[in-house]
Length: 255
Image (tube, rainbow, N blue to C red):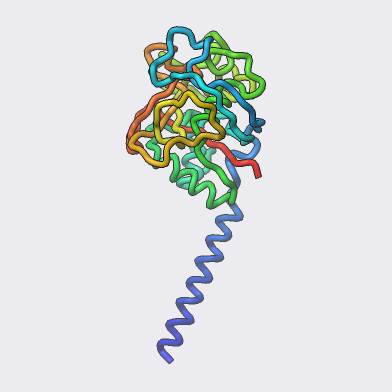
């Protein structure tokens, strides 16, 4: 009889936990609702293209043809307010003015922990962009005008760089797709393990299956030269690496 009573109590506790979890799920408001920009798939030349000039580095070569499918990408980099809301359930209204700045000191794992939590609460297929998706979007997708930076050939029109700190997201001109800060503010992690480019055409490349370094893109606020903010510029670091000029942006699969 005692065992039966204990079993009933445990079942009731489990039910209460499930009900509470569902209540939290129902109350959660997707902080990216209305901020995801549709990117129609297409084919582009990835890497060291002519407009990048003499600034290209060896790891940006050779330029090669890439085709990507359609996807949604966030208009802005993930902000401190969005991070706090998803990971700590802190209301953005209670945060200081820094809430509109991009979340920094993000390791690749932190970025994916955030995305896993966001997927849990929303049921949506959010993820990090592949490197090819990131560059296609930064270049303006099928609306690209062939700029050196994301939205302009004049870096200071679109990029927060060579500065003293981060800036609030969305303070510079957007690119052709309406995306902000694809150049400058913070470097953005991609999903890919790093590898050298192939000269052959590729279809929805996702990088090697394993590796030691992950790719990040876009340039940061403290870079001492605007060349780091070019759309083809790429760098890499170990997944556990973090820095005060490194954040991320999310994408959403087209269902």
